[in-house]
Length: 189
Image 1 (spheres, rainbow, N blue to C red):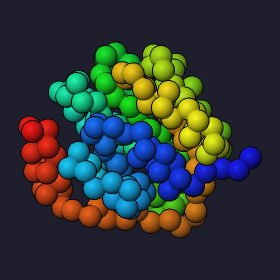
Image 2 (cartoon, rainbow, N blue to C red; image 1 turned 135 degrees about the vertical axis):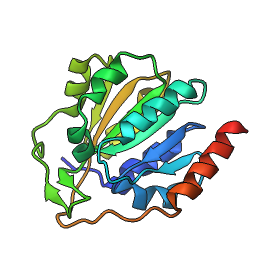
Image 3 (cartoon, rainbow, N blue to C red; image 1 turned 90 degrees about the vertical axis):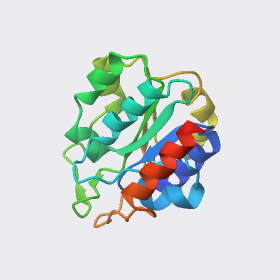
Image 4 (cartoon, one colour; image 1 turned 135 degrees about the horizontal axis):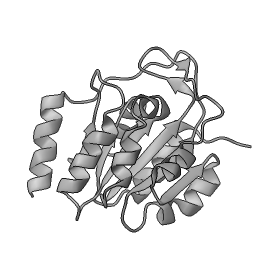
């Protein structure tokens, strides 16, 4: 199997994101700004890992016509698996992308407890989310991204990507205050 890179996974997402709000976390914060600089992009890097999906859920409920894509790491999902049940109990137009590289990036790239054996899309389905997808090969993701990102949420998409031990999480290109102001202005327009 030829596993896709994190960059390749996000390139496909960028081609299919439409006019949705995109929230990136952890390693995606360093890649996404090279692919998109939309006012609807928000790089969420709090000290509380795992809250990106909750932020995305709130925005999706507030902006149902627009929809929200949250790009979360599997380490973050491990910190807040319970949020999958909350997401399943809504009709939120939320697309939760789980980048599974088997690593905790925030703490220096150590392997997660789930590395190599957890099925996050299966966990999401068991939590009650009907539409789930899992991709490990780039061609498969490219060929089915329009389907997976089509329609309304909630949807969970797991993308297995190559991981690099010792990987560090980059800083967002803008301060949190700048991002909040920029996103708020874009939502109002």
